[in-house]
Image (cartoon, rainbow, N blue to C red; front, side, top):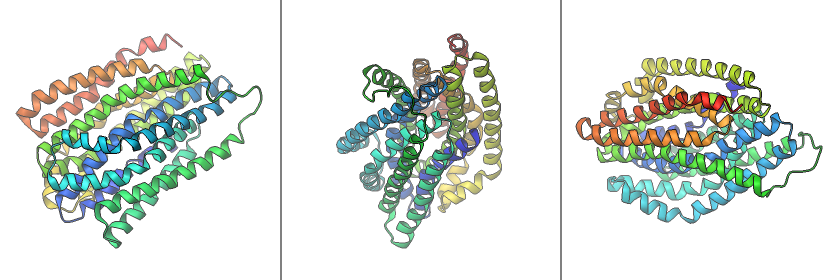
Length: 423
């Protein structure tokens, strides 16, 4: 199961990477900066509500392990309902969100202008993205990695084709990149909905149906998602600080960090593939209260996550300069990015523990521990950021990010024996 999940996950960051690569071959540096800021705003919102996937997989896998098929059916309805409500709220608040963002981010006038254009087009994809998160989480909980793989590969392939068509054939620039993403997200949602309908017909239909608006179930779902939202708020705030502080260092540093940031994104999504596999496999074992199966599955997941993390290090070390060249044709940006390439090369070894343990804790729905450890790690990040960045500039910024990822992994590892005793 882990193989298709990893492939599906790796396809996700192609959306942002393609956007950067397309504008990275336009003549001005500020186009890259605009997509960097615009993408950061969406990543902040999308990651914040990634709870719709993370909070759906574990409970669905536990219900499947316990043979509660009626509850499995109800889970997708509750998740889509929550996704629709959140998506509508974000659309209603799009202008205040944008106004607040540019009070906080000190970007150049050119970057701000094109980032606004990018945001105001792409924001209309919000309901589609959040509903797709719910669908993907449900399928992972069912142990079905093929459907999410097809949906995500289709979405990203369509985005690539449309981005090149809109920017290089029609000359739409940054708005063309945003429009390509908008269309692709809704097309992907339609495909995902078709998979859901087909899967529901194949599920066993014995026993009484679970209520969609069951108060206790909804309360548990909101509780799990609330913990994940707070945890994710800290995670995406690190990204927000990273881009905002990069912008303070100038358009060139912002563009270079945006290029290098995609190395981190690809690593996180590759390693998250094992976290998702852990949620499905270990969630089923947790639902059955099978401690030995939980431990066996966990060992396998960690071994393969370590292999993939090491492989990422090798790929970035060998092909890093070539990847940078694919992302941008501007010589100054290439040179600036190459100067800090060491950090993305080393980051997989630092982050593998945090990403994989996330899947373990989500499988057991121990979301409060995840929330608390991330809050502590975020505090460490802020202390290092404001201590080291005035002294070392961009290097201090990268050190703070590495410390955040490393601290998360260490804390989750230290608290794992408590989780095991609950099985």
